[in-house]
Amino acid sequence: MQPLSQRTETFTDSVIRRMTRIANACGAINLSQGFPDFDPPEALTKRLSEVALTGPHQYAITFGAQNFREALSDKQFHFSGLRYDPQKEIVITCGSTEAMMASMMSVCNPGDKVVLFSPFYENYSADTILCGATPVYVPLSPVDLSFDANVLESAMAQPGVKALVLCNPANPSGKVFTHEELSIIASLAIKYDLYVITDEVYEHIVYAPHRHTYIATLPGMFERTIECSSLSKTYSITGWRLGYVLAAEPVMERIKKVHDFLTVGAAAPLMEAAVTALRFDYSYYTGLQAHYTHMKDVFTSGLRNLGLHFTEPQGAYFVLIDISEFGYGRRSVSGVCESCSDVKCAAGTLPDEQFCIDMAQKVGVAAVPGSSFFRESVDHLVRLHFAKKDETLYEALNRLENLKKLKK
Image (cartoon, rainbow, N blue to C red; front, side, top):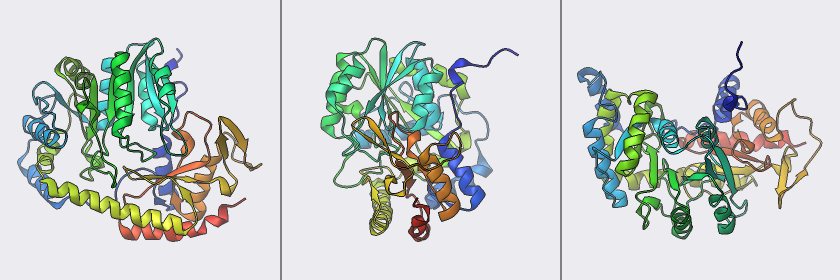
């Protein structure tokens, strides 16, 4: 038999989705894969039930239903002040995952390079490699999640760099990039003539005093920013798989063509129903922020009471917890990895992966090993999310009281 693709031979399955399967197998509370256990807005599900009877049930226009694109254009103008032409500058995709893939494939040639901040959502590296490009990683400080502007410039100035991926608010760190940081990124993108491909799915989940800024609004950035996002997190409909790309017309013309050959189009009845959500007034978004702030406060207060060390989320709904005290991982200090213990983990399993497996099986809470998000040798962190009902969070915190069972 002929060998399979070289560019995918180093791929593993998604660690996040793997941890969901482990959680399901052992009855653990799933705080690994980031989806809520509460219902979407009632107006949205009511509209979906109506659409189930009336349609549409056939293909929509490949780049998205007209009324959906118009509603999205209005919403984006309200929050960013940018008016994207529904006909020429918007395409609706099958989730933000396809939005990112279509954007990457439209920008990158084999042999190009793409700059990623580390830690990063695991798909970004895979998307880059699937395009035949090479990731270039820029570390965020483990203390305050800032970046060194000189290190960033060195990465962006490398020959062959075509784009930078910016997740803001960031998964898995919960970082919200400041206006000053975005200005540095923008100035370097302009200086080195790079595209900035953004993932802004958590744009409405930001905790005071932090604020979300769309980098496309900065001077000189509209033409070179490709914004990817989705309805999944904002409206608690991760299973609907409705994403989108916003970009200037010359870029969007290419993305539309790639999208057409990737998935043809998003689900017509779901787009029809989701127009209702896109037309919600501003009170929905203030309520959403208050709801997530409450969940964050419940969960982080509980973690604090348990004496755990974690990153304080600025946005999104994740925390990174330091598991060094349990004797599994290694702490990266100034680039030097120091072994914490002589723990015997399963063959081929990193210490933080083993910790997550043990925690799911013995404590009953599922997390994601931090090593799946870092390019650096960091395996003393695990990621948990808190997009859950109060009763789920309180039960998870009760179970986490048993973490002492895992101490080596």
